Image (cartoon, rainbow, N blue to C red; front, side, top):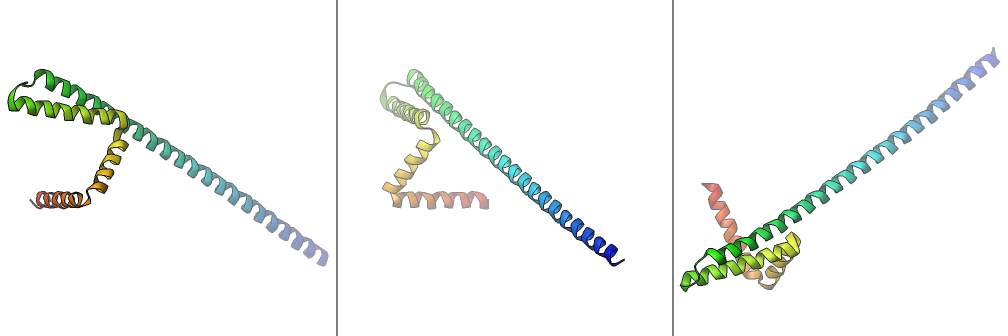
Length: 142
């Protein structure tokens, strides 16, 4: 009977060890599955971000082209003489310049230009920021 009890003890210990191993393997498989899923989700999010950035750059380039087109239309149909002629010419030149900039450099180029302008002229940039903040606050309070 003692031997029978000993065999039961060994069988129980073996079953317990087998259960631990199985649980360990299941845990590792779950970790691997979760890791793979997280990696896949991160990859999809990264792909979506790249797609959105690409579309934004495309849209910016299209806006640049439209600005240049508008500048040409303004030159063709706008006044050519006098003060209005000078003003329409200046507006057309500005539109064409910014349109070209948008087409060539996109949003990142604009961000770099703004950053450089703020670095060159920090005090006016701060004052403009304060003024815009004041205007937004007034608009929101109404």
